[in-house]
Amino acid sequence: MHRLIALAVLAVAATWVRIAIAGRARPAPPGDTVAVFGAPVVDGRPSRELAGRLDYAAELWKERRAPEILCLGGDDGPAAMRTHLLSRGVPAEALRVDGGSHSTRDEIGALRRLAPGRRVLAVSSPYHMLRIASEARRQGVSLATCPPPVGRVTLSSATRLRQTAREVVALWWYALTPPLRDQAFDSIVTKTETGAFRWGSFKGRDTNE
Image (cartoon, rainbow, N blue to C red; front, top):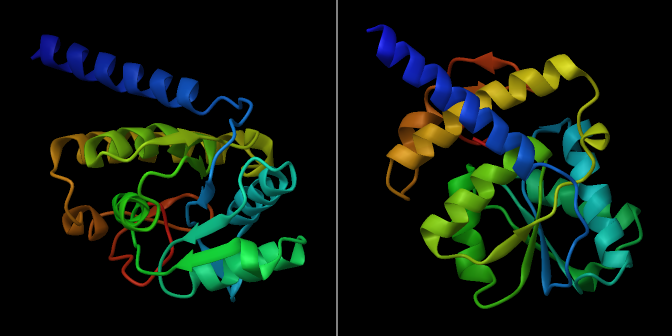
């Protein structure tokens, strides 16, 4: 029993370290599409975390890293993302939206459909990068992860701790389930605007489950 507990602790610690390494800021390579992964939208406007992702995507576009930005998520989230990017000076012709995704797994599937053969720059929060890269490999999608500096999307260390703990669970769930719509996970954990946990279904919400 003690050996199993020790192995579980080591697995969690190793995953935590991998999340931290994958989330380190790095120069973005040139690409064809900047793909922004969804996060909560509040009263029709991007949350602080999502706004930080969008602002970074706008910077990559202005630096000519890629000629277009693809907004991913569910329901009204991508429309709010598009409005935010327009306010940051990105022209309408450089923007695409897809509102059919309610999980990271869905969003990778959307990239497989919408950007086949393109050099994709994936923009999301640093804690999210490892799951994006892992799921992309499972679905055969080639992309480069491009996290913004952590302070631009998350203010407090307590929030970062909660987000990383949640991500450890999500990573192991994705690794142990096939690349189909993860309905079981959808019904277990939903991230609130603060990054905390609550029970229930997140269908219809724009999150990173």
